[in-house]
Amino acid sequence: ETSFIINEPRSIYRERMEAHLRARDILFRNTIELWSIESIKKTVAANLGVSFLPTFAVEQELATGSLIELPVRMSGCIVQTICVWHKNRESTPAMRLFRDLLQASALFPM
Image 1 (tube, helix red, strand yellow):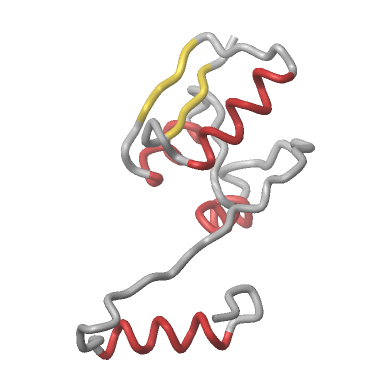
Image 2 (image 1 turned 120 degrees about the vertical axis):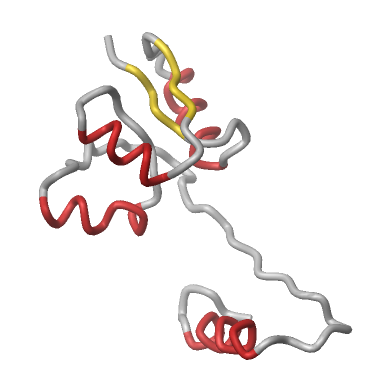
């Protein structure tokens, strides 16, 4: 008897969690769509439902205890990220820095 609080309708996180729940015949009373991760976190912290968000988005709240993580065993929960840019346009300094940071990360080889 709780609500599923999530963002945009085609969010990869939402799709993965809803598929996981359907496979286990778990139904929520309703779904609340909010367009801001910050709004979702505040709504969950107010005990109005649960959400499925990337860890990096809730690290601070988990550290302070304002949110708690519910362990969910999901197979294939890795989300692939692709970084693209226009090859014929001059990159801004911010874009070059962003690409350099991605290249330096072991998680995002280019």
